[in-house]
Image 1 (spheres, rainbow, N blue to C red):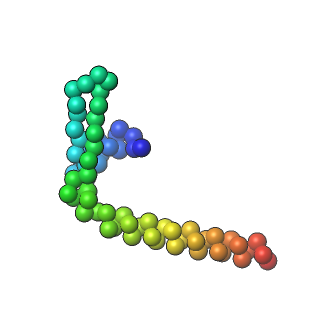
Image 2: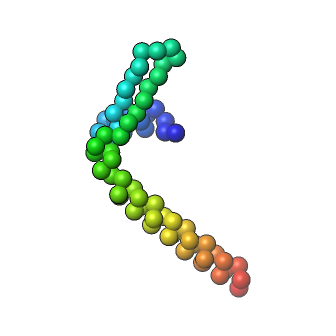
Image 3: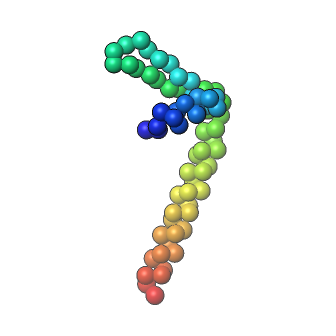
Length: 67
């Protein structure tokens, strides 16, 4: 979960839209905008790069512990 300030920043940047419901307790929902959804391929690629990097580091660390 992101902090409220991060959520507001994403809203200000046009990544998410915020809907406030007049209820008790207060209810707020965030949804991705079209622009936010357009970043999905970039984020997926970043995940793949991160996973490869972690695998590479684990392999490197395993070799170091064998020697």
